[in-house]
Image (tube, rainbow over all chains, first blue to last red; front, side, top):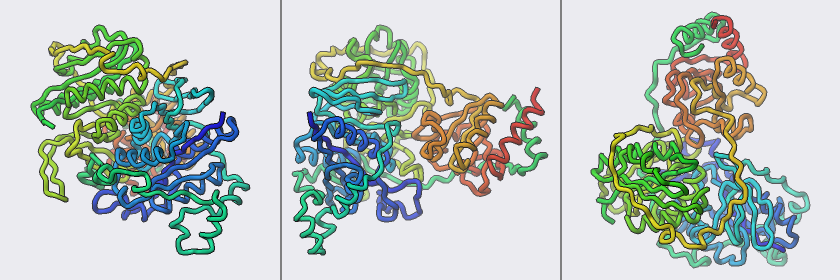
Amino acid sequence: MSLNIIVLAKQVPDTRNVGKDAMKADGTINRAALPAIFNPEDLNALEQALRLKETYPGSKVTLLTMGPARAAEIVREGMYRGADGGIVLSDRAFAGSDTLATSYALSAAVRKIGDYDIIIGGRQAIDGDTAQVGPQIAEKLGLPQITYAEEIISADGGEVVVRRRIESGVETVRAKMPLVVTVNSSAEPCRPRNAKCLQKYKYAAVPSEVASDEEKKSFIEKRGYLAIGEWNAADVEADLSQCGLAGSPTKVKSIENVVFTAKDARRIENSDEELEGLVKELIASHTIG
Amino acid sequence: MTDKNNIIVYCEYEDGKVADVSLELLTKGRQLADRLGIKLEAVVAGAGLKNVEKQILPFGVDTVYKVDDDRLSPYTSLPHSSILINLFKEIQPRIAFMGATSVGRDLGPRVSSALHSGLTADCTALEIGDYTDVKNGTEYKDLLYQIRPAFGGNIVATIVNPECRPQMATVREGVMKKEVRDSNYTGEVVDLDVNKYTRPEDFVVEIIDRHVEKSKVNLKGSPIVVAGGYGVGSKEYFDFLYKLADTLGGEVGASRAAVDAGWADHDRQIGQTGVTVRPKLYIACGISGQIQHIAGMQDSSIIISVNSDPNAPINSIADYVITGKVEDVLPKLIKYYKKNSK
């Protein structure tokens, strides 16, 4: 049986390389100032989707991401690795969304896609680490959820069997489709780009990326598979009062760079005498030994 | 919305025991309830809950809501969410806490979505304070400050939910302290009927196999922690940390950067999104000291920083700073420990 799979992906700032101008005055993230990457656990999610596509021929993998038009980069990246296409959900009205407003907008887009069996996303994104959007989308769509998934073992006869990795060990669960699955980083890493896919989808784009280039525009129009969807709030019939800052119950009160109350640290030279002295001191104070 | 309402903690329960993280949250909840002059409540759902209140009431809990049914254990998302959603609609808590565990982080978002209330994950501090909305000047008294490192631990953010209730937060195990209020504290026990709070279709997710693994790593209980960061340089150099930990009788931890680099397993991660430790001795090797890491180890009694960068931020909270390469310093520490210990 073939499946329609939606992969939720997020383009995230690489939080491992954060500069001083990373935050805006209102406490939200200045994404423009940071290198943008495919959220790591969303790649684990994509791999699970691509494996299902191999197991169940005829399945279709659609990436869904919310962000500015440049987020089309990760849809293309997903297509290079084997996804069939994708949609960028983009609107100024979504700016400043907390997890609840984000899940509202994404669930509206999922409803518009309509035909789906499994929605798979990473457990959490590295810029927020909240792990909230997956379960919140499930709730908004009235679907069951399986979080902390490590492997989707099967998806037969309207049911999935999933192995989860949680603190206390491993759990294998069965649930009916459709449902939402969020995937851990302990799952298999995503396969690299495929040369054929790269060739095929090199010119894939959202309309706004090629708006001023008639040649590219008509090139894409002739080859439908290169068209990445670009939807705004109106396209998904989103209620604006539930989007962006207005739709976010949580507000950032303040952002601080924490200054630690400095202790009076003792500097120990990297010499035999001083290191031996330190070890002796720690033994004498019963800290070690 | 009335702010006379109470604080409630979702208590995780398995194998006859309420989880430590839940008891830690009850302790924090009691402090905040005192500060606000309101009651502390707890809700526990599971199987075999006969005397569970005996574990909960001593933390100063005024009401324990119990939902006892075989189908509620082990935990699955839908029935536990339904119980919380329906109970919260009824009693309208002002504040709700749950552990930032694989249960709490599965449950919390679902509940917050259904109630359209905000939720802040992995808080490292919870306080009460006022808030003025800069846009319209509205003033709010006595909100819950949900404080957490954000953005990869590069900053600390204080989050509030001015309009929506409950104000919800999750906290990791070990972040708050666990403290019995009064072993004879008396509170009310309310048994809830599972069929009133769940629907039959909530029981669609079936656990077909469960394999409980005891974690091999006992970071939380170890008196000595030798932790490595990106500055260690390679997976091979992490061996020096294992050797030192082995020699001293400690456990090896790691910063997020080292875990992300694949040099250490996830269960060794120390920090906001990992384990919080309070050992007697913490040896930070090649760890720069991002806020999210420091949040998980700053209460260590003695901190030694081994770093080739003399200005690494972690040095500012260290008791001893050794400027040098990990692969250089650690073998010497091992050598001199062996020489000087009996």
